[in-house]
Amino acid sequence: MKEELLLLDPEALNACVSCGLCLPHCPTYRVTGDERMSPRGRIALMRSVGTNEFDPTAEWIHSMDTCVQCRGCETACPSSVPFGDLIGDTKKALSGIRKLPLAVRGGLFILDKPLLLAGVTFFIGSLQKLGFLRNSSYIPADVPLFRRGIKTDHSSDDPVLFTGCVMEAWTPWVHSAAIKTLNFFGVNVSLSGKKVGCCGALHEHSGLRSVSERIAEKVVEGIPGKGPILVNSAGCGAMMKEYGKLLKTDKAKNFSERVFDVHEWIAKNHELPDKIEKKEHLVVQDPCHLRHAQKSHQFVREVLSPFAELIELPDEGLCCGAGGAFSVSQKQLSTEIRGLKSKALVEAMGEGEKLRVVSANPGCVTHLQAEGFELKHPLEVVAEYVTEMNGTNEMNKFDE
View 1 (spheres, rainbow, N blue to C red):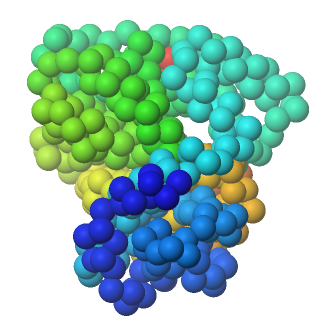
View 2: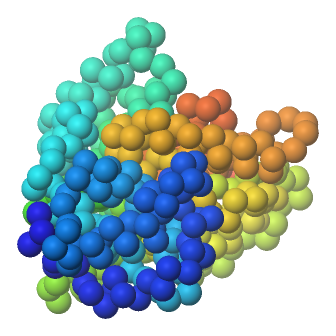
């Protein structure tokens, strides 16, 4: 344990001046008030690795395991401490001395195995249809029994839409909406498909560095070329943009430079339509890995603004508590953090009818839907309006 943790970058550790400006932006500190559950406190514990008194106690491990890895602290930090790198390397070291919860280990094992994921998807979908599985904070409603392919008209020079693992299996309608939206802008896409599959983000967040590296190498090899790779999941996009840093190869660095959040790519490369006259009000919930990791959350607003009046949350991008597998491994903390987000959503909506909420990450959508809010991916909303503008209700879904 000690040898692993000594690999933490001392310059990164020493960059923290313990000012505490990160504390209001840390969801675990907000709900516990415990300094050990804050970025400042965790860095202090990481520094203890270099002392003779260091001993990886259960409390020390718990402090690290309860980090959501939202990276909100990085946005708030005036010293630009790369906390995401520090906690990532720490969790890698922890993977050698403690086991992840069985549910997390099982889920991670399934994600990059398409046939097994298809079988689990059928099982979950069947339970939902029979009424035995409802209102889960980490499984979306109406999981399709079968995953069907989708046909697109494209050439080898067209952008690639990354379809991933869980999104393709459990929420394929989001990909349909992305394709519909891109077609509206005159863009055809090819799909990465199940042969490429998972991006490895949840494995990396769980400290399984060797697995995430293997998956990253597979993705890089599976999407050759020089064209843009468009991603509609904030967590996947953040992971793929860091393949270069993860694998430390020129090929991976070149790959990461091709990766764009789909809203980012549309806003940078296409003229948006004029604002429509009748517009609904939408509440915008920023996924942490879009706002704090990719720093591309503003493009969601640019793409949505012609179609809706946007309402901001009074929480400065605080995490919703989903955190990939966090809602499974730290269920109580995750629920408490979601309570803060729910309060912000209710405040933003005010009195009157309940408004729809948009969030560009499937984990956030599922986690908040369990609280009774109506959530959509931003591109689902855009697709609704462009379909209306085109005078057709055909969505070219592949979830039916």
